[in-house]
Length: 231
Ligand code: BT5
Image 1 (cartoon, rainbow, N blue to C red):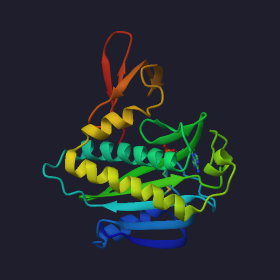
Image 2: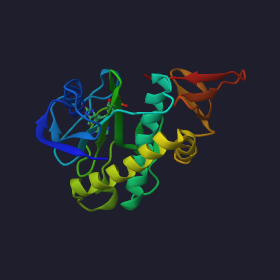
Image 3: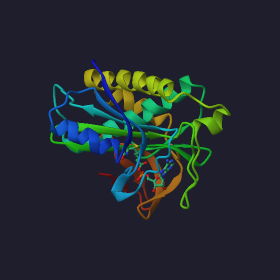
Image 4: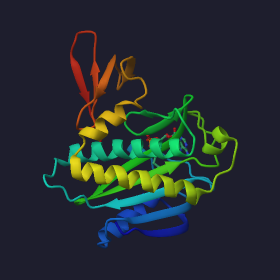
């Protein structure tokens, strides 16, 4: 895989720049990296705080699968494989015990460390990654942390990104060649709240696992399994 990394000082959103590149016909492996974002995006119109010192990256994928799964399946799977890749990359940096809060948050000690935003452009997929490396922003609505806080040591963002990319491409290749099965099992090891009672979208039940669409399976006390989808 040939990677082309475009590094910017400031952009509104690396995902938006990557979508622009995709619309211009850019190849798989095009990566947009920025030191800071003025309009970093979360899901459903939420905001991603993007002070200098952290990793803000978007990766363009043009998945060529033998048998294309329906889009909803593909995007859920890519979101999970990205979260898994981040957690595995962090393990190589000696940050253990990060958990995956469905669908796409990296959580440790109840604090948010990273977020993933998947967006689609025609057949292409943009994978946005925000990881707090040296700067945990103060937020009114939730606690955050950074690698620096966890390791008590400032890290080089390029080194961290190198680890993330290595882990991401390994899992992406596995997914292209063998499908989601091997990754689904690996993701389950890191799911926050698996087999416990949780509340999602106002429903309370036992978190039974993740479907192969990436949907969350929740069994309510009436023994009905709810398949909760995020898009
Ligand atoms: C996400 O959304 O977690 C996806 C975040 C993806 C950000 C990357 S950065 C590179 C690329 N370009 C973009 O424009 N976006 C992607 P969501 O699950 O909706 O979480 C948003 C919530 O996370 C906010 O409402 C805050 O509560 C919290 N939050 C915002 N900034 C944060 C930060 N830096 N660290 C931890 N939590 C944060």
